[in-house]
Length: 201
Image 1 (cartoon, rainbow, N blue to C red):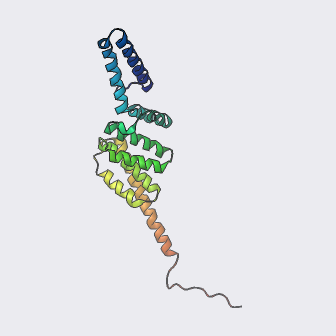
Image 2: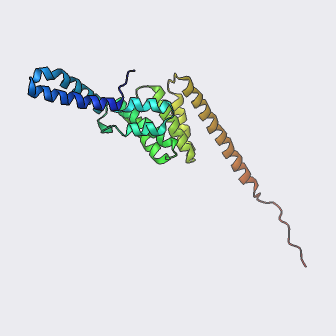
Image 3: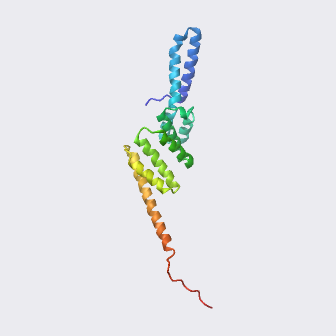
C-alpha cells in the first residue's frame, strides 16, 4: 500500500494550507479551494489513520526504536479509526515486550484485543504474546487458556502457525517439568521411613 512519508505529509499540509490562505486573500476562495481540500484530506488522514502503517513497516525491519518514535508522532491514539487504533496498541505492545517491559506490554496488548483486530492472524499474534507473558509470570492456567483460544482461530500465515506450535511445545515441556518437580518433592520425605539413631558414646 502507498504511504506518504509522515514528514512529507506534514510539509504538504503546511504548504497547501498556506498556499490556500494566500490565494483566498489575493484572487478568491474558489481558486484556493482545491489546495485547501487536498490539505484537509491529508490532515484528516493523519488524524484518523495516524502513523501506524509506516511504524509497521519499520517494525518489519526490526527497527524497534524507529517504530516507537514513529508511533509517537500520532497526535491522539484514541481518535484513530478503530482498526488503526487496535494496530497502534498491538505494535506498541510488541515493542514493549521486545524491551522486556512486560507490564506495559500486557496492558497495551489487552487494549489491542479489546479494541478489535480485523483478522484471526492479528488476534493470534496478540493471544500468543499474552500467553508468553503469562508464562513468564508462571501463570500457566492463563497461558494454556490463551493457547486453547488461539488454536481455535483460523490462522492462515505459516509463520504464525509455526510460532503457535513452538508455544504449545514450550507449555507442554513446562508442564512436564512441573510434574517432575512435584515428584522430586514427594521423594524428599517418606512417611514411615526408618531414621538412624545417633551413636551413643
